[in-house]
Image (cartoon, rainbow, N blue to C red; front, side):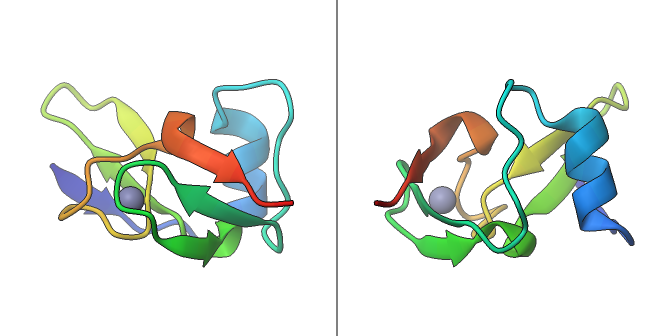
Length: 74
Ligand SMILES: [Zn+2]
């Protein structure tokens, strides 16, 4: 997995976030895998060997969590 550096993180989310409700960069989430609490702006993107890009937990690559594992904090 190779990290992809994203210049405009909100634009990237708008175009690639896999679910209907696109978060703002200032939203606070928790990772269901590593329990890290983070601002959405801290997300990382990794590209796999076939070139597919995945929005990942800021703890990646140590944490294998992706956007699907993010929990909204009340
Ligand atoms: Zn995580």
